[in-house]
Amino acid sequence: MIERRPFDTLGAANHGWLDAHHHFSFASYHEPARMGWGALRVWNDDLIAPRTGFPPHPHSDMEIITYVREGAISHKDNLGNAGRTGAGDVQVMSAGTGIQHAEYNMEGEETRIFQIWIIPDARGGAPTWGTKPFPKDTRSGDFVALASGFDGDDDALPIRAAARVLGATLKAGDTAEYAFDDGRLGYLVPASGAVEINGTRIEARDGAAIRDEAVIRVTALDDAELVLVDTAP
Image (cartoon, rainbow, N blue to C red):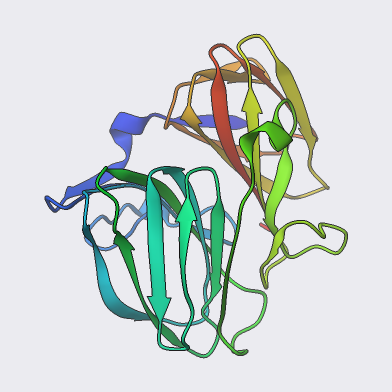
């Protein structure tokens, strides 16, 4: 089953400096039918105006993965971590027992991100933060693990959940496949470009909720940039 969730049906909140769209219930957007997808709890599609951002705020017991689509995001937290993550790259914050952080677009241009929250397998643990570049040409034509809680995904940023966040770039007409273990769920969003997933057309920034599919075959109808989460039910 592949359920298309069109971009124009997502929750939305425009705060001026932040134009946010929510694939799942978040903040003031509450939709009982979209409370999450397995352990995937949040997928926000955020546009952040230049030289603005999220002031210091706390998190706990959540794996927070930020995929930067355009521009850059700058992070600073109460543990002394600080860094800048640019377009195509990824940062991961394991909130654990608690962390306070701020995220700002310090650039002179708009920043676009996907922010993905995954429920960890266990509560607690020391909070951590990390960032890593993932050049787009290294994931051309195939899905590459960007953040993962699985052994063997050695090049991915670690998370504390039995889940995997993957990225792929496809030229128009190209196809990539991804196999799911039994019972696993998938959620795929094209950051850009339209695709077909096992024959179902998904437009840029739509969500595709995937269940009971052993393998997905993704064909790009345009040049496409894709993010996929493979999660426990």
